Image (cartoon, helix red, strand yellow):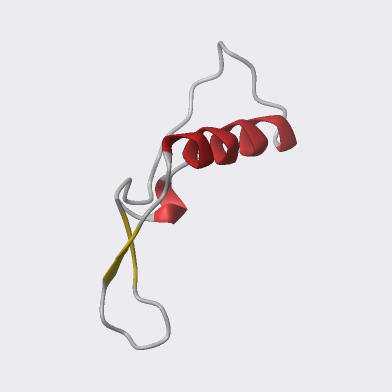
Length: 53
């Protein structure tokens, strides 16, 4: 479950399927040229869509 403030400013849970999360992660890795042995530092909260890379 990811959270978004949307346009009203109140946090809301947004359903994100595992398949969608996997696709988003794979697309981000591909676009940024990441390989399996790369190491990343996640500074965005992982409970928010911005942190799911």
